Length: 466
Image (tube, rainbow, N blue to C red; front, side, top):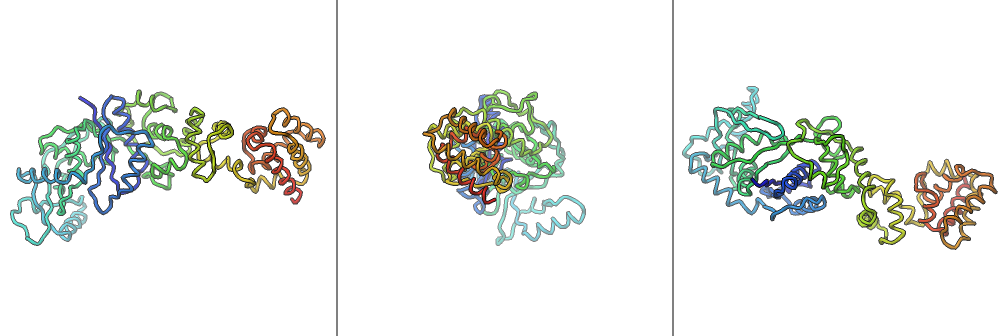
């Protein structure tokens, strides 16, 4: 049997990071098995579905590299198909019209709650043959009222539902649009889906869908419900845990392969290995190896994994990606020798590409933005003469030469009776505005001796004022 899996988001908002994880599981399993990864856009809600969200979903999947193998299926273009099957069930006596008003449905709900029972439809229209002509009608599915519905979940194991717990769900609304459980079954069958891989929050939908498969005489796919990701406080993952939409992680400077690595590792493992390439994941990943219990979101671990992937990235590839972040920040840059050298020096020092842009700001401005604490601590009146003298001597150099720069430092330190540790941090703050940077000679190489001379003299004046 060919493995055919699907990812089926609704374009009612930006693609959440948890949904992206589901897409990754489906894509990896398809690639692992040599199967097909399909995409379905569930856009049957005209009020909430928006084209901009559809485009954001497609863009996010492309950014991750999750290329789908066939043309995307749009549910909004298949309404007649859903109606055809709803009327088929109606004709076969497996569904019925319901004309209950919102007030009647609310009354049922309140009565059930008052009795301590789960709110459910009481089936009053199940055998009704006539309906008020002025009332809109929906079509409800005749759920099995006795016995049990059982299925073997690849991840969760055997799951059993008592059919008495399942009420008669609406399959077609009064406006002719299908509900989720009904359209999902029709589409999964029509798309020849072999494995339905989705979040554990869909487990309760499965017995309903299995009954619809049975009523239509179709073989259901295999089901695999993966555990969800929880926040560090064990609550549902939300923005307060640092979880945002997928494309926001791109804006924050994360690499797609790092995000895939991180999301797969929440709930899946291969020995003690933490860092995986996408090719390694394709080779090793199998949905049956996913844990049953929810995983915990760890933003610091995501940053660490991203930093490792940045360090592992070939320099030219990383420079191409980083270039776009610098351009978005408003810097007029191109990939030249200086840009490559800058990326090389910061590749081992940053955890995100946005952090690289922030740390390299001093290279693209006329004056560095001083960290106030660093300025107060290191740009003192005692060090001011040495900074000025260093600036004077660097200004006389014709271009950067590491040996000549080293000689200049040694001359100033000897004349002023200073050691390198006394001069290094003041110089670093003077040149970059910060206390952390690559080595001083590397910073001078990036800035150029003339720009360094100007900054050292300016910092000397600030220090004298202090």
